[in-house]
Image 1 (cartoon, rainbow, N blue to C red):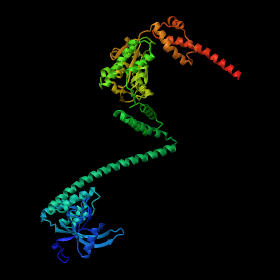
Image 2 (cartoon, rainbow, N blue to C red; image 1 turned 135 degrees about the vertical axis):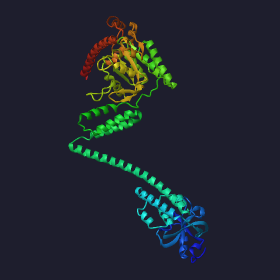
Image 3 (cartoon, rainbow, N blue to C red; image 1 turned 90 degrees about the vertical axis):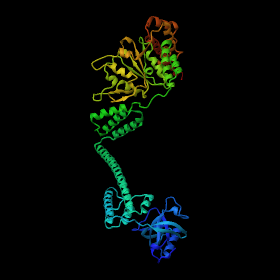
Image 4 (cartoon, rainbow, N blue to C red; image 1 turned 60 degrees about the vertical axis):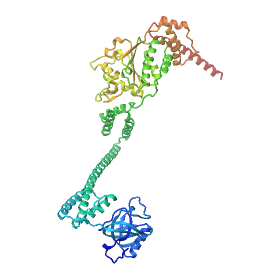
Length: 587
């Protein structure tokens, strides 16, 4: 190594410190903290021999032990140590003044760390181009200052006070947010124009980045401000309501509506979610005593109970259906066979993953005289499929709003019977029995037949619009079963949607077996009697059937049996009371 009394430009080697994660520049006076033992020894060596040192950043994740040229950025600033301080934790702090940028070419010693270097000379430049570039740089810096707070506000004054492009470029580079690799490229660039153009490009990138960050920050601040404003106003409203004696229960109810809505969000359509959410927000803004608030709250009470996403998961099984039909009904072989065929087709379609709306859309209609078991067949089907049963009586229904729902503007408005049935069943795929569909009527208030067509049509009922709800609801998962006494009274368009299963009258022998197997046990249970407390003889049953209940069904026969059992229950009560009295006297 050459001595210090030689001119600096003639020196070829110098102590090296590489413990920083950023570049220092010639114009800087910077504190440098050093903790590595080799670098501390190098500082002491430089100070003992009155030598300048070179400071350069170390590459990320590089090991400073056994320092090599590949572990550091081979460019740095040469300068003097103005002051050294030993810290309590064993580190040292030096105050370093940069003088000139140099390029390190080789590490020649490790204890202390000495390296060979050469000066980084800047190429000559055109004064006219220099002024033009400098003018553009100042404009860009001024624009960047508008968007970024990271750039020192006095940087323009510093630039205006200097005419040296090298110094100006270093001042700007040190202020930009650059990676070490980017800073190194600018650091070693000897062509000043190329360096300035690169700096201009970096400034443009920072301006765009700063604009984006400012926009994001502004949006976040606005959202926070809006949220804080709403929170503040809500708290004020709570205090006002408290002073007025208004119960806070309403706020709790609204919050409960929101929770229930969010829990069902994934199972409802987007339109349904928007409509319900809109009404919840509307209710939160209303005075609790207004008529509209009561109307909206009634609406929310209805719609929030619609069983979105809730359905019976029990898989269809033909043996289960057949077994349940045989348990609940005597005879009726042809109707049972047709019901089993209907569900066999549905099960086969499910097993093979076929979506056949034509077969699935067939509506079974049981028709026949009163009391022959039309509704009870539907009950058996629901029991076998483990689905809820919803019975909708259509006899005398003339107002189409009974099916479609009333518009919310009307006093006493409520959902239609179909939606009400779903809410009652608490599942979206119940068995819906349309009872006495042949008695649908027409009136000036509309034709319910047209609404019933949409309900039963598999191509339309997946988007059934209830006027009260004001959004579509899916009815395609429900199974519809109709009953009728006289199919000639059913409108022709409705008849086209149905497949009719006749349930004719029972023979006296069939009635006898129905009474023995079903009616008598059911009535005994209903009246609180045991099977050994009353015996109905065969002759008595036959007389009831032949002399008193000459009807197609067994409804009147049930009444006669019930009458006999009631009389027996009365006599049994007298006997029970008498036995209790005797027991009390003995005690």
